[in-house]
Image 1: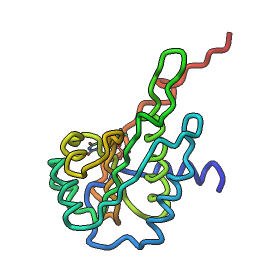
Image 2: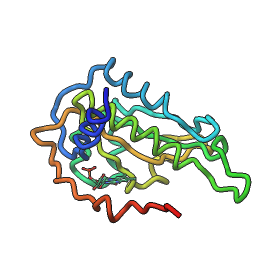
Image 3: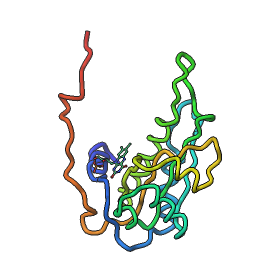
Length: 175
Ligand SMILES: Cc1cc2nc3c(=O)[nH]c(=O)nc-3n(C[C@H](O)[C@H](O)[C@H](O)COP(=O)(O)O)c2cc1C
């Protein structure tokens, strides 16, 4: 893969909010999860656990925590959880790096899924307290993101990419 291949992949990763009624093969899902497993994390502490909601009861629990009809079209969900007691806290100011580590792993999931022709969508606007309770997660784990994953139905309901320009977001410090 060269940089143009990577840029193409990054451009082709969209938030998919409409999924086809088609199963995700187990081996493809395992490859996607492998991309999360090898993600970098602060001090390599790997403060994460990924739950796969594939059964009807588990999927219903996820849908109840995020009150949008579209999410129910996905065949399964990955619930990315962070462990604040494992994550690195910067010694100078005790900054907790859990969210950063989880974000990297989740984006690995989204990009590798896109490479496999799968759609995903980051979902953080869910009721984390409710999902943690319903999943009976241990006290140390926080559900940080839900990632519905599946094959897009049609165009998957994608919206055109709207991004700031390079000039708006990059500032060179040359002095
Ligand atoms: C941290 C994070 C949280 C997000 N939470 C939600 C969410 O709860 N619901 C949703 O529909 N989209 C959510 N999104 C998707 C964003 O709206 C989407 O990535 C953004 O609009 C850019 O569109 P694109 O992903 O198609 O390029 C989230 C994205 C990120 C990175």
